[in-house]
Length: 78
Image: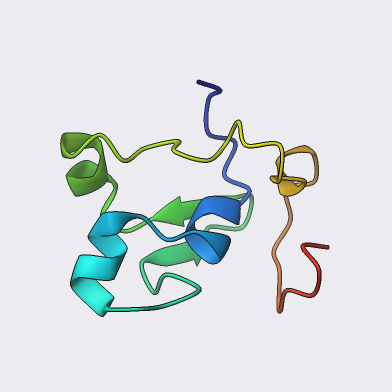
């Protein structure tokens, strides 16, 4: 499993089961925020406790990993 780089892909494209439990069916998790350098999770301790950290960082579909930046909207994972 690769280390999280804070690209936001997981929480924006594939919210974890905790996010679904807290917010219902969503696309971008409301617990995701930009700290000026990378995306972070407001409930990271709960996610760690449940083994939900870095779930998708190593997915081949994650093209954001090499381009960490704040994203206003998502179109074709650009």
